[in-house]
Length: 297
Image (cartoon, rainbow, N blue to C red; front, top):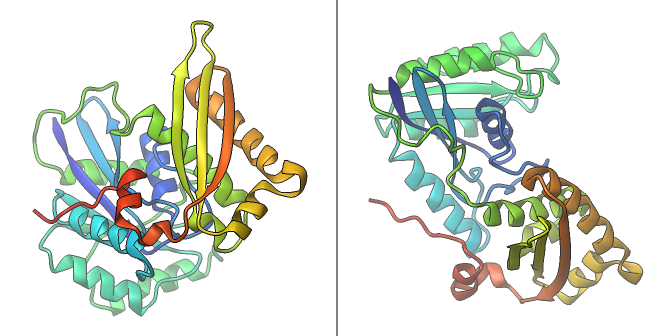
């Protein structure tokens, strides 16, 4: 039996969370086309007969603009230092560039074994793939590179097999019924945030937090969920609510459908929008909203 931790790292919006969800076979991280979708370190656990891979989904590498983003980058740095293997993810559709090479070399300097996953190959021109792979060789990077498509399942089995072979011989780290270290309550908040990311444009989704006030399953099996959507500006609140409450009703309905699928039961969802100015730069509110600052060991 082999088991261990694999940190999945890379620039924002490279496809890390989607790749982990597909490899684990369950939704353990929310996804959207926008950077900074993942804010926390999330573990996704894949258990097979002869191995267990604990994927560490990390916030995408992004230039810090506020205390929350700075905390997210520290989370990524700390996570990368405490695993058995590193999987650096590059967006094959957008292409690899000098910033990727610099980051790969930076993480190589940690002395932890590493490989590269080149994602989204199903939507990149076929003639670009050999050119992209050649760039890694030209940069002098002696690393295994896996071109993959999470959406099409291309090379996913091969990548999982490779990663399992890199892990030490060990007993499983989690029981085989565990797929994530996060609670249902955490995922409820994340699913709500995902739907806001998908519905609203520009900066508003990045400036929201979800606070769960009530998460309770009634005797009839229905979940009662009451939550606050916290934003940073009064005009953001107006946009989130929409004319005559249309926007908040639409996004709540959108979220409720996914919540019912995730929880396997009916959901009665109540949402409120509140303003907390500049909460992303206020440490007390970051702690109150559940954002953990991982410290280096």
